[in-house]
Length: 228
Image (cartoon, rainbow, N blue to C red; front, side, top):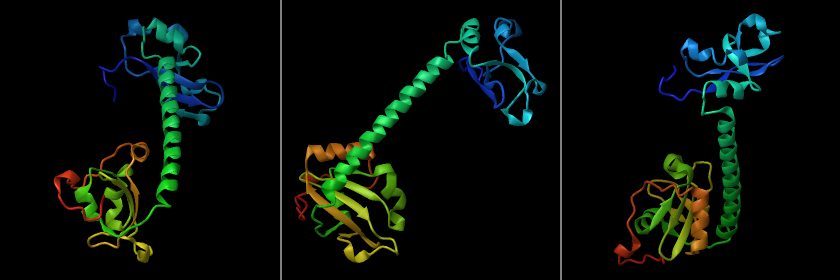
């Protein structure tokens, strides 16, 4: 279904492996007199125009142009959302995601080095959540998997940061758990002193995705509970 309010642009209509490669048609119908302006750069294709119709995917019928002729069609029809513009935007998006992925991978490696050598004092998860300033749930892993004994949390307190690895699946070794979770097998928790550097690494890895569980700010309480 096409949207008449959508900007006019060329989109891939079909792909021919033998001769033409990708063929582009308009994303919506336009008046015939408008189409006439671009017809000299296009062809009204039918299945017989392809060397091997079995090697064509998509719709092999209608007015289409090759990639090479696309700029001429776009100029004739005053198309602003050009293929070149959209390809540039996609390239920039891929570059951003590639750079972001690399940055996340590097941050994750640094966090593993920091936390996996950190102490693991006993504690209760509900206490940590009550006193947390902020709790990060990467990709909603804890929200979506805690019922099954999985998921991770980064819990930021005033003076410390905890990395919680849920370890409550039936096949897990519950004997190594130091974090008590109500009505569950428990988790492994690593505690380090708070630092802005570690907090910033966590923001990168989690994309600042906040855990939806209930929290209560530490400064609102007079209890220490060994959390500092």
